[in-house]
Length: 274
Image 1: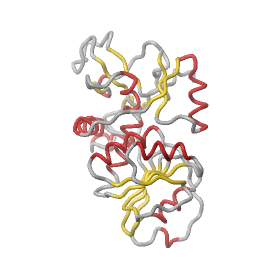
Image 2 (image 1 turned 120 degrees about the horizontal axis):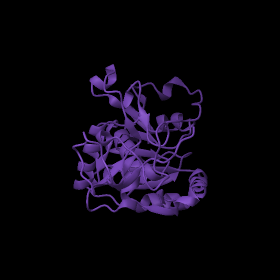
Image 3 (image 1 turned 180 degrees about the vertical axis):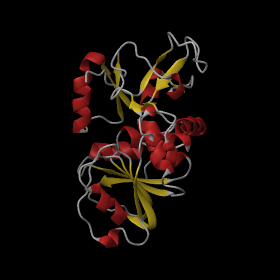
Image 4 (image 1 turned 90 degrees about the vertical axis):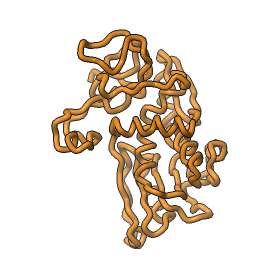
């Protein structure tokens, strides 16, 4: 602090440094969560820059997008495809990218559970079903609107997070920051399956019986993203287009947008308009 918050930024280049060669003035670019890395540590040099020892993050350690103008490192920005407008492109830059990395961690899984159905899940559901996956969506118990939204996004089943799906899962992705979902998702996956925790933060994971993990089930986390993830993701959605569901707010209403997100009363993603 002080910091200008806000990631998933979309804008046009109005100025650039002398060494910038990737973009020209007027180009439309997206600024993701990962704002820069050291490029020298052992992680960066083995193409695991998402684990860099000295990263900077947009809107968290460097100024972000709650503004009319922002400064970004061109090496970590992405070109926004012409077919995507600014509002619908913005959620792809974290919700989409992190979700895609989590999806990749599922390997060749075809029956996948999404725990928490918000910004990331609604994007990945469209991509996953587009390539033939069978998706089960888990929402807060009793959230019938959220379950209806999940089915609209292509999920074959939707129910409360306290339920088991009608079919065994190959993998599960936990988008909600709720540690109690870990043992619940382990109980829903087959032997040899994987549970991927996609959030930066999560409440404490409660103790659970070893039998839920036994059978060579795997539990892993996802940290940040790499630029290669972004390139792969934008290639994937070019082949299997997705449509982000958004609710827009004026920049001055940012706190109201954040409140609504915490309450879970937004279907899809919230986007601020400076």
